[in-house]
View (cartoon, rainbow, N blue to C red):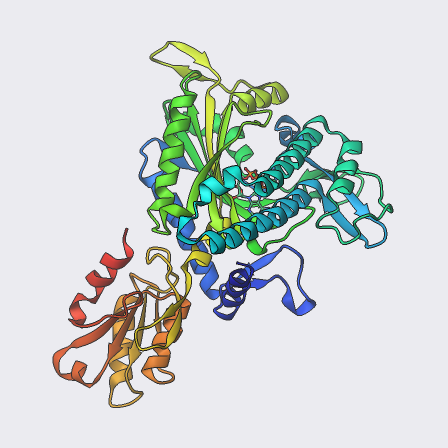
Length: 503
Ligand code: ATP
């Protein structure tokens, strides 16, 4: 798995998808740039989300709120007081630790041990082996599982009670993930706010302290009435938004899974109080179906229903995805009650209510939110698409089987040779297709190598112009996934590509 993850990162760089930020200066930790293909893939995923939310639902509209917001916003939302993580430094190694990351490391390590136990038992028992039974009866596995549960529960307690001494004890107990295990040379535990601060205004004295938004949702809440009134929206209705969010993650790692600057795609759905559970279930199902429509495989998704709820929620679930480092949160679906709108009413002194013509009364709506990280979506799509494939003739190829609807380049147009007028015909095809699709032209190297290059870059269709084209106006199209080739008239190319890339 670790190997696979390294391949994903290397491939993303080699094919112009993702670069480390300011690489020539040795990079900036947990900040990444999207290259020529990455920018396109990311844009296509964003569009795919936007269409499914805004165009497919008559009662959902879009919004593009500013990254800077009035500082009181973050008081009302609870981020100033509660968006903290306990943190500790080791003076010997100068390393910084965050409890949840340490616990995650610990879990991974113990789970690896369990996997080893299972592999061994499989060998020993052969066909008679039953993994579920082994997991629920083997004393070694049970002991390890119990230890995971104990540490996880302790972490939850420490976080809930804000117990800094307990946090320190937990780190010493774990001793895992920290090379200086046993070291006594720790700093005090401190609370660390995850919001980035900045200043608005010319002179130091008059400047206002601002935060870079840590989530896009608050831009939606503060505009709730603007949109409802000007759009004449009736409850239930939703507001959707995509945009950058910033969090000063203490331990940022796992490539674009946890970044300091990232992009969210959020939708807040405003409903009648008392009807939120119905909508919560609706959005859980609808959002999972959206993911499934990309064709990455049902087995790669699972729900994680939260027992422990954030202060603003009365129900919450994550859609988890099987990333190269295991199942992790991809999207959150939260029933946020009227917490946010009520808080903004209180802090702003303005009413944020809806007059319900059917009930003939005004109320502060309840909110069901869907929140997915665009960069995490990118990683899910990209890492699943990247495959090493053995071919029938014994050779192998690297292929990026991106869903065609989000692939950066929809088709590559390739003249078989660089003479006899073939490039001119190929360029004419490009001229014709480029109004509708992002297409590429490539005339360098032998045709087989060009096919492989497009396979690795994720291009779903190759179109080859050869000498027959000059006589009969047909070309060869080659499918990235099946590698099948067939002859088609140039005049049909548009509809063939459309069929492939339109969901
Ligand atoms: P995590 O527990 O992984 O830190 P979270 O529960 O804090 O995530 P939310 O606040 O619910 O995340 O944010 C909604 C979505 O935004 C997440 O499901 C995730 O896809 C994305 N997201 C959150 N933090 C980051 C980050 N640092 N980098 C990239 N994406 C992120």
